[in-house]
Image (cartoon, rainbow, N blue to C red; front, side, top):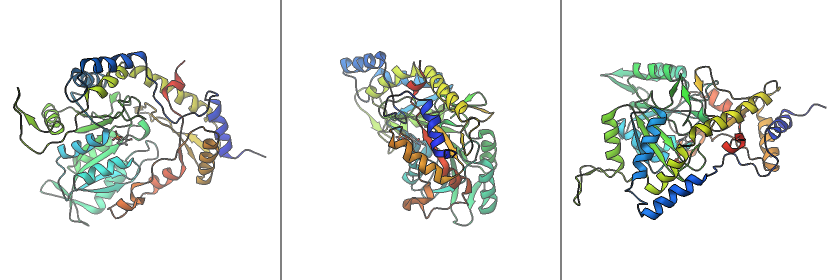
Length: 387
Ligand SMILES: *Cc1c(COP(=O)(O)O)cnc(C)c1O
């Protein structure tokens, strides 16, 4: 009798992994330099909102990504909130995002008292499908006085948040063209794609503004942390202002010239970030090595395939993913693998299936539904790819 696709896939995954159990989905390992920098931060007493590590971390991120300005924040969700405010999202607006994403993407839209509008994903990039978006706008939207309106709800559609799923860049050129034609601000949620390139350019540099996350499970972590990226110096300046309680002045007397947010990354967290930034190229290489191993293992497997990068992109393979033809086999695979403490996970629940977002405007979502029922994330910690 032939093995089921689920147990065959588990055999292939197991062969790519070391013998110890459990094998985490994604866990960080810290080098000596991390201890040293955090200790230096403690010794100096500058652990909080003032200190040199935040500036240094921002500069390292800008150098690595090529972004003109980077502003570090307390986490990726707050970075998204600030990004949408900076994209001029107003209460009562709609903002487009994929249904297949982490809940933070949709939540940040809600924080602005705007409504998420869910669009479908693409099979190859796993991210927002620009052609599906264009089709949905053709069906429901109209441009009036330079503003895109949803004719079914009467609300302005202000922006699009694209998310680079598991590190795979969306089709950014086509998306940017669609956004500019409909007068929509493009925001990139690059929380998962630090180290991923689209046509040789770091993700997060095509949109007007982009966000990163340094949560514990991301490719580098500051414990908790995030960042805003932009090519626009003036917008970068406003981003800093908005995320540092809109403070103006110097010396000992400060004013606050608008209602700002206390979203600045603490120096202690930034110290951890600096230590890992030095290691990032090695981490990306290690992750691509693991992905190469999985890709080779699944090359000729029936009923299940490995999600590889598209021709336009270089993926950081933050979380490796396999796709089953049969959803029942995906369920079986999740159960069998977790039973033997090889940690695997399905993707997020689709946003429109969450009761909090079930009433939001959306198009038909056949690809997002297909993917959500068939994808499984498999162990992806960088140390698995280090010799
Ligand atoms: C991790 C992540 C975020 C941000 O998460 P934080 O925990 O707030 O840093 C946002 N969007 C996506 C898609 C993510 O994966």
